[in-house]
Image (cartoon, rainbow, N blue to C red; front, side):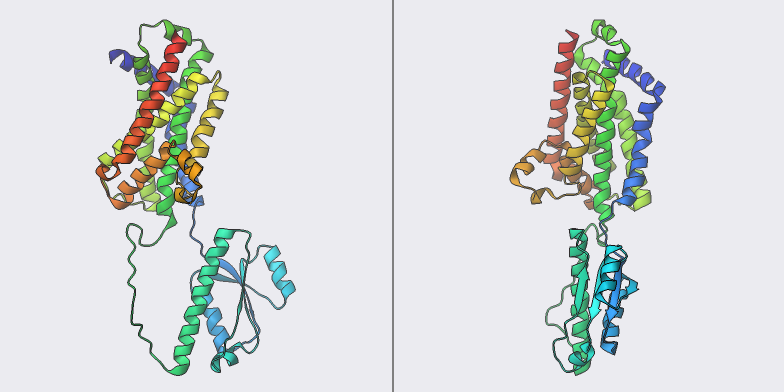
Length: 371
């Protein structure tokens, strides 16, 4: 253990002298959280709406007011012809248009069906589907209210729903995305930092001294990992605190549970970087390989943004090899639900197995290189 601590002390001095690595570990993660935390948002509000009210009745104005007072739509343009609509759609000035034909109010008063038209820009399918849902809900609500008002009825439905949403009552997409962002940033910074460590020794010509030094490979791997683990933990906790302060991320679970889950996840990420460092011949190659291994699987296959259960079965099997998949479940459970590690023991075991596997492979590779 003394030899491992000696290697760790030497590596820590090296990190402190290398300001680039220190910046990657301590400051870049918080910067990424600021940048992507505000940029990533699935909440769709203030949709630019164009209106063509060819009826001009009380009923049509009520419908337009319902759209604009819903909080989801902002009035963007009054259009008079299909050419006007095409122009504002092509210019991206509006994302939706409400067209109310003549005699809509009269048809409503007669109890007849009065169709109105909603035209939505479909270049973003997710946004278009959400806007369609908003529009249909508003139109149905207004129709019901107008019928009841015309007939002088006060409808009391026999069944009422009292929805209660746990853990995220305001349905803020930020609370879903920020934990994923923490895992994403932690994976990238930890993997890249150790990916450059061993290959740096090779480029600077100090690798031969390491090979001849009376240090066992496990002690060398532990010594190489410890300083990066400490700095990565500090950085990860700083990200969590910054997320609580900037994005009102709740912390309903135990800090010790969060620390243990984060440590296991970071050990896997650091081991991945160390394994890359034993394979690459230059810092440039190590950086590129580490970035690919950390970025794409964590972003696409971890459940960070895209639900894993919606992926094809072969892709779902691949996601079992992505450590961020397990960390995300544990992280969201601890910070949002306040659960303990006993309820995420499978994720804890998976992260431990991954960390042991990649650190073991890195040790085997290093032992071969040292002869």
